[in-house]
Image: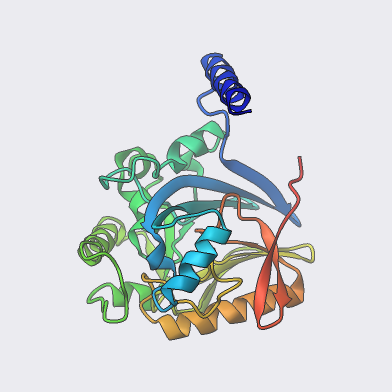
Length: 314
């Protein structure tokens, strides 16, 4: 039996290599398109980055954490964290929601993929009229700092960020976070670099802002003081891009804290509220760090929630 499995795996490897040689850059294109009413939405994978499992559940009992990751066939000590960005077309506006990690950080060779995947999808970065930043962590603004992106964006691109987020990163507080020790300095430096580079393009808002017809960004706080989510609403249909309000553990354990949360208690309240709203409305939900393409719905299950993946529309 083992020999048979080995031979099958070897055959699959040769078949994949042969297919790849035909000229496909990637056998899996890592983008998924859908429509919300009259609005086009494209979920694009920026790749993955490895993180310690403890980062997902800093306040959880280690035994319970280990059991959850084992049940999910992940871990035991680290797992791959998905990175998803969104492209939305509403009327004449093309809106990029977050920009991934970029390729300038050592140790994350499988992240920073969204520029080439946009190009493969036929989307020119020069056509982007607006960018929404859910928050200024490096895996959301880092992609705007690489030459292949910043040199192709139009000079008048509008970048929408909550005013509270910009203010926070002027003197950020990491008191309640639980990150690997080098990370806060890198986060701080990246946020400052982003603001210094795009200061004249940034358009701040207080509570919520309509970026385009049917596309609204709204402040939630929690993960960072200025963390925001994006609502796409058209023709009686709605999709919410939840940014970092939700993580893979959030449905079964919404009370588990994430090490990158600047206000863990508020983060719990935010994600529970968002999941209850999504369960009540039946809307589609996408989040940065749910497995690609992360398009699905939320159901209530007792005191917790259940993720219901959407059927792909081929």
